Length: 116
Image (cartoon, rainbow, N blue to C red; front, top):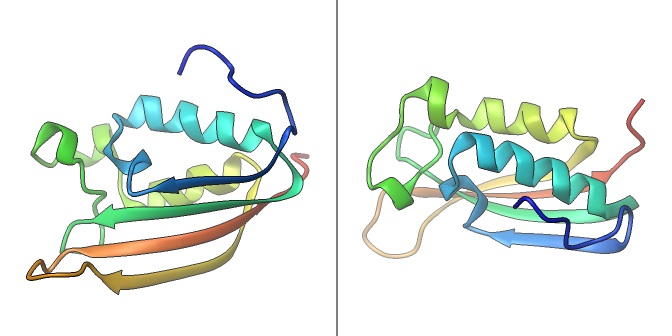
């Protein structure tokens, strides 16, 4: 995530399907900032986020355990970071994951705004 793959405002749409929540919190915050930077004002960001059954914690399957909240973060901290990065929430929908799991997936549609 150190190199910038896209110029500022060069994307109309960015999509992450059940991936960004599995990154360590520091990496995820950086990725959100880069997504916001690369998407043009008025562009769209579509994200799906795997949640633990409690509906509060992001699922970090990469480490196969729940990191402490202060390390991995909660869904509220995630939404706050999106908004601080200049992304405005258009839609947020929770739905059960397919299969026998009691896990949830949240889908977000956001638009890039000017950062004041």
